[in-house]
Length: 327
Ligand code: ATP
Ligand code: LTN
Image (cartoon, rainbow, N blue to C red; front, side, top):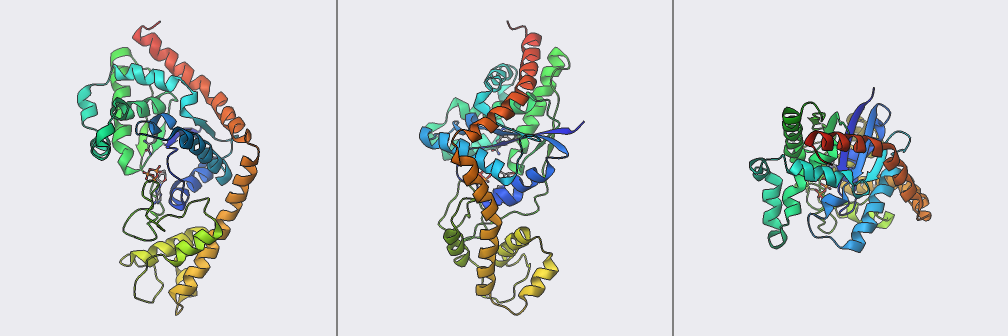
């Protein structure tokens, strides 16, 4: 039996090479040995304000990029959260068994409610319970998340354990893993800041759908330092970040890379790096264009994923309703 892994990705903002090199590429490589479920969490997205037209487009765009990157429907299921009503239904039921005290401890809510002061919704407060429902519906073994989401997965474990304690063994208690990100890609304009969907300083982020010219000009303008040697030296975050991007796209070893650039200048290195990134993204971009040429194709792949996993969600929800005494 393959281990079941559940991952959620928010359809907000544009997917960038940090997401690709740090996560999506590894998902593609792991799909043979793991039973992966990828959920595009549109219900989570609306916990803060979204433009409806943009949201709809972004949902398909994220899906298209996952498929273009090599996620394959025979091995993995990709689906849209709001297409399976069991997510909302289980959230409601779990709400009724989640103590307020546990929710008040959630640090992401504290941060986000500071940031979105005027428009803090009940949904934003309930975000972690919706996430628990996502995970618990599919008998998930493992949830790989970044450090910032660890507390939410621990809450999902606590909720499952409490439910099982009250009603008897019903929900599988998932493990959380923090993948050792091979790389944390930093912003090109400011290598002390993470490359991130929600922070798009001009020239900070290379998006997966950027044109070759945009990629070239962002890399050309990338912040480095006044030294000359091209080395993997963490005390020089600008050039080091560019080298890591080069390393991941070329697959070359660090010694080999340093030897190749010995005695050469930043300008030459940046020019070659830009071509490496342009070429590295080009197959993905052409597959994306092919996949999206027929506007219904992505929807058909999503429907296929949904059909495969819907019975798992429905079975869990039915068991939960039965235990609670509903219906
Ligand atoms: P946001 O700004 O909305 O938090 P994000 O770009 O940081 O977005 P997430 O949606 O939180 O991305 O993460 C999706 C996946 O991409 C996660 O597995 C995360 O670890 C990975 N990831 C995100 N940013 C980077 C980065 N700069 N370097 C490496 N991996 C990253
Ligand atoms: N909150 C997560 C996205 C997410 C998720 C999940 C991750 C929603 N549901 C279930 C893992 C499992 C985020 O912001 N990255």
